[in-house]
Length: 304
Length: 78
Image 1: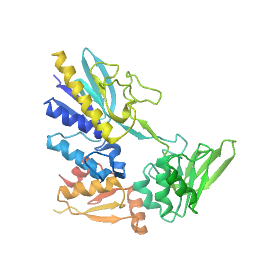
Image 2: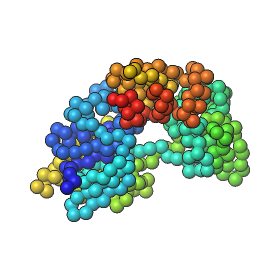
Image 3: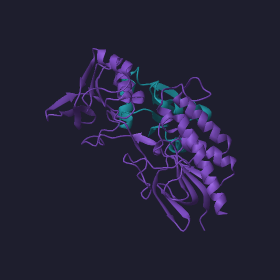
Image 4: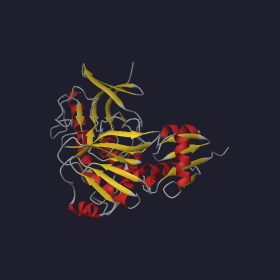
């Protein structure tokens, strides 16, 4: 007979890791399945608002989270992605790319990922000039022409990193004007090596072995080609909630939870950025993770 | 037998930092190649891995793209 866990936690960002620490302290029989450890925290530059640390970098904070989890002997199963969850007869089945499990309760803390452009050429040239991480791959494009797609804070942040090293930076922004933080926006707009295309979107990614350019289209339908070797997509985030088919979500695909982190299905809880909780912050995700674990524990206690 | 390990990275990339930390934690010696300051090495990385993302880890000639702990452990025999 297959083992039935007390709890499965999907995700090991701040929400999932905090949930795992609480579950371990409650001596629940559980596993953590996740793509990676740290989630978006790893991508954060400087973190200056996580209580107890006046200043810490994202990767350092993620390493601290991992260390905390390890102290309780928890070994998250990495590069394991959930494809389906189903509940029947009081048992929740979780299917992943590596196996299938059964559990009495479930916490979904799978976070968010970068939104894709959904244009021809995007998939083909991913990591061949097209990237979703300016911090990582930006330095590879020193002295080259690059483009940043997007007009919010993350796009401005990417553009400011790139103007220091790239030959020229083209910003492709779908809205009539750049958004985001006024100080960052001014810096970008004042830079002589930046050209901004407002009211414009990318219609195709072009290339040979690697990226050679983008095709853009403005709101009047006028098309143009821009020759670039690097494309940095910064158009926001989407929740990793596709696998949660029977769970109620809002229009953005975020899982709806109440103040006890309960979803519409009893025994299935959710926490952190994948939910509709207002404000996406590391400290909030961590707090939500602890609440979800305590709710799952109480749910099990009631069932006994 | 000692493993020959090379890490192609940039100074700012979070997963590069984590790969290097992982290797240090496991007492694995490696050559750190900063592709942001060495164009020839950046091209070497591209031709080895067929892509333009960091980190790229070369373990005894086996090329691994990204911080894939499972693959890295296997290649190192950990």
